[in-house]
Length: 88
Image 1 (spheres, one colour):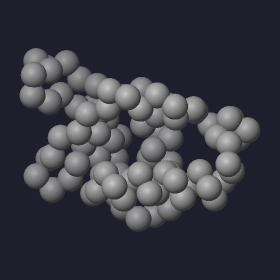
Image 2 (tube, one colour):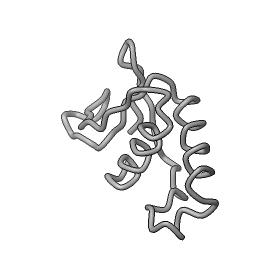
Image 3 (cartoon, helix red, strand yellow):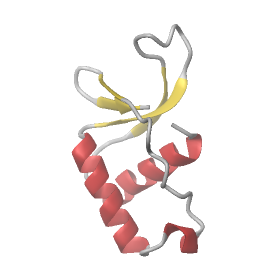
């Protein structure tokens, strides 16, 4: 996940206010100590709903607002931290 995408998702989550999210460095299974930018959240489906509501509330077009484009979310992975989900 890019830093811009993580910041955009966190801003959406914080603005809508349905869950607590944090941007963290993450190194999961099979990453052999390499870290990547990630976002923790309570629920991935809720985060996606937050993002949709956020975009709708702000504008129909992120580009018009100068926000990072969110058109390349292919390749995102998730892991369960036991009580939160991490998206990386």
